[in-house]
Structures are given as C-alpha cells and as structure tokens.
Length: 276
Image (tube, rainbow, N blue to C red; front, side):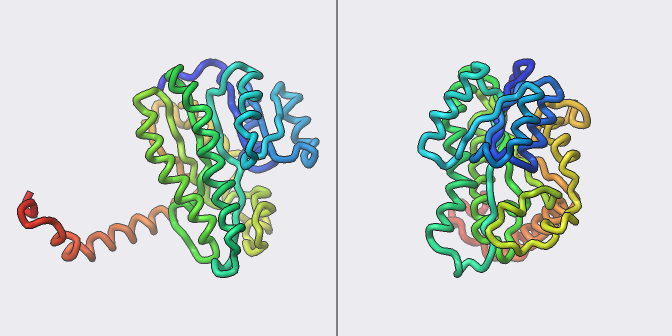
C-alpha cells in the first residue's frame, strides 16, 4: 500500500457509539481529520459535540438510503478526499431463523453487507487513481464461526468477509489496502442494536474486550505504527482472546474435515490428471 497523506482523512460510519465513536475520537486526538457519521444526529448531541470540539465533522448518513452516495460526495468535499473509509455501521438480527420474515432478513443484509459494498464502490475509483487508500470493514467473529440464533447476522458477516478478501487482492496492485477487523465480545452499546435482547453478556457489561484497547489496535495496524510498526500486512485483524479462541476452534474443525474426507475428495478428479 502506498503511504497515506498526512494527516489522513477518515470517514467512519456508525459513530453514535462503540468502535465508531471511539475510533473517531482516537484519530482526532492523533491529529487526523475525521468525518464521523450516524443515521440520526439528533440522538447523540453529546457525541457530536465531542467530535466537533476536537475539529472533526459529523454528517447524517443512513448507509441504506438511496442518496447515501450523494451524501458521501458532500462528505468528500469537506477535505477534498477520503483516505480511510471505515464501514462500521451494523446491527445484529438474533433469534430462531424460522421466525424471521423475508423483510427482516433482507434488511440485515442491506445494512451489514450491501451498504458497505455501495460505499466501497463509491470511494475506490478516487483511491485507485491516487494509488493510495485504506478500506476498513468491521466484521465480527460471527463472520468466522456461525452459532445458533445468529443465522442472518453471521450470513451478513460471512458475505462481508468473502467480499473483502476478494477486494483485498483486487485492489492490492493499485496501492489500496483492505483490512477486515474481527472483534470478539467488547463492552459497548452494540447490544442496543440487537433486535433480540438475548445476549446477557453484552448487556451486563461483562464482555472481556476493552473498547479503547481494541480501537488502539485498529489504529496501529491501519497506520502501521505503535505496536504494529514493522508488522507484515494482513487482510484480517482478530480482536480479543475470546475471538481468537473461536478462530482456533474453526481452524481445527476445518482441518479435521479436510483430513477426514480426503479419501473421498482425492478421488474426484479425471483419471488422466489424477496423478498430477
């Protein structure tokens, strides 16, 4: 990836709380330019004031709105460019799959998957022309390992993972980097964006992840500074020990499946190339 301009300009979605808000504040305190956004500014006057007092801008952006790209153009005009796009806005639809309506399923995919795609599509041409830029897509360990009650949430994050992985390789020759962040359970108000109040750990504030430490890790890896200085570039950034344990379980299961089915998959090629 080519070097980002100094100071870089961030556009972050879903800044009313959690990772979005904390990452915006961290970037501003490090002298960067930030355009924060949320769906309804009137609900977060205190947070908007925090951002603006530090020199940041805050725009109202519903990522699913038909005019989202028009608003994005206006946001770009504030500083003349966007160097770092953070697709953070999301919510979790939880519960038994059979209880979800088609509209609920589509809305989950629209917010968590199609909206980030739309914003990426809009900023990529300028980033590619400059041969510089960073797209951070906020995924989840639910995008690595799917569990009961998270069918649609995991589906949306698995889709985002696949898209981001392909985009990573597609944009690398043009100096544009893609980073997938995969947090485990962090103490934030994300539980308020769940349609089912079934996750007691999140609501009770007992999640192991420290939001400030998580945001610092994202910042360091994005800017290749601090603890990430000199670190090799990777597509994925897992966050939290609980999340890493789910990674290990998934990798172990994949290896077990691959090994156990070798006697079948190894015999499915054409005979004339079987030995190649």
